[in-house]
Image 1 (cartoon, rainbow, N blue to C red):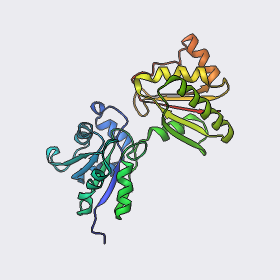
Image 2 (cartoon, helix red, strand yellow):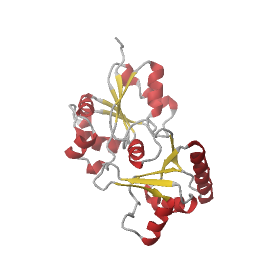
Image 3 (tube, rainbow, N blue to C red):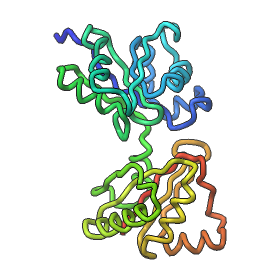
Image 4 (cartoon, rainbow, N blue to C red):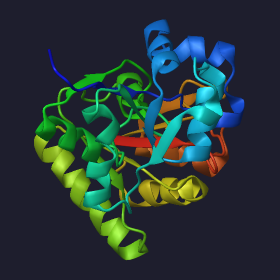
Length: 249
């Protein structure tokens, strides 16, 4: 029997922490996940404030103020990441929690998981919402070949160049291309995609996935251009809403 605890990869909801309630949790998180959260006293999280709001909503056996919560983000040094494993190496179960969705997927938590494997710690991923997979599932695009690219370049010229490159790659390999944007720049990116992609390329936009305001549409770029120009009823404002963009040439 291993002397170590278990590293549990705990999915978060995709909603704002202030919007989490009992119904939201039960709709997206299995009872098994919630039960494991109840039992953990040690957590590594992306943002402590967000994590506390989530843990308060789910509930814990130990009072919230007595939980051991450490942060891990893109600025955390490698030596500090190793230190975050101290509790699990001492025999305690450890929960890894992202600000939204699944930890270690487009998330700095992957570094902790890597080091856990190196140390021989058991890693258990738990079921929960992933905006990447939910968008791909609902897009109707190729789910056999796909790539998630994170954020596109901020510079306008570089962004346009990268979109054209990804479109050619998509056409060559029948690969669905996926990416996100800072929420307040969503509409700007959407317009850039409509100006840059070929009319027959299929473009999917998914906003507020799993939320009551969820909006998911797939159309050709040519169809989107007509809707955008005429402000069709199927258009929506994407700004300040978590959004996935996907296309297939």
